[in-house]
Length: 126
Image (cartoon, rainbow, N blue to C red; front, side, top):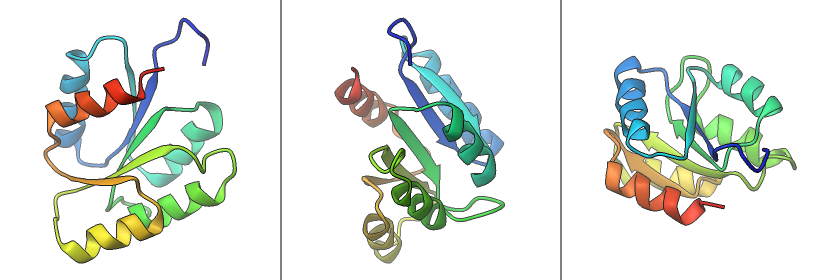
């Protein structure tokens, strides 16, 4: 990332409505760049080219699960330190525990809370 480039956030989500909601949140958060991927494969291709500060990862994707994807990210030395938040419409305690055990830094339910997102981004700002 060049010094003039905005910090990058990757949102991995296959639900178009959720993507639109998060895109709208980012329109109100100047100084950040959002890129979206709708599949795990698309996300991995993006991550091979760019390094976000944060990845928001849906737990159920068309080609993989959030748990499988985080395991791949944590096993890759170049991506192991990426801040990752699991995102799901479901809120069971066992899924939260599984997400944390697999290596997620946090677990949020949809729809995302814009104030919580803004606070996290502020804490990550370089």
